[in-house]
Image 1: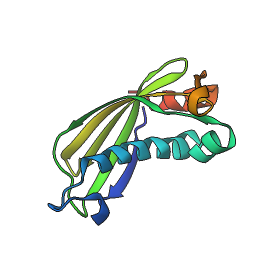
Image 2: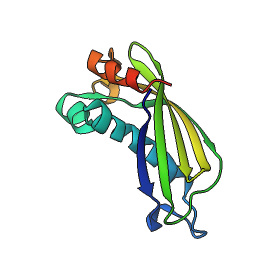
Image 3: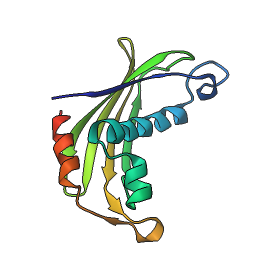
Image 4: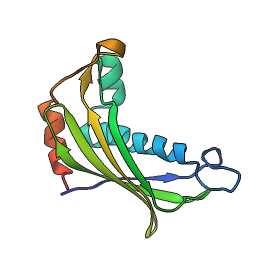
Length: 138
């Protein structure tokens, strides 16, 4: 089993007056790691998926447990594993850490859809996407 990992530095614009990361920025970063996973591991970037082929992977359920704050200029390691693959949805487990300190854990359910706006419909995950996801199963 592989784990997808990226590291991000906490920037000034992501923090509040106390110098800790504002929680909505952490939620944005959760989305960023999913986007990076598709681009770097699956080799199916959001540009190719959304802009060029009219598919997408919106979040349908997000459960985040914030464990401790990340501070300005911390380097946060983000870890993604796939924990479930369905016909047209999948679930990922994302952990964020600064060194050995746990920042958060997120369980995210995403759906593979075709179309935009009011015409979105679930669509089966492509085999090449499922095949890569299996390599990251936890």
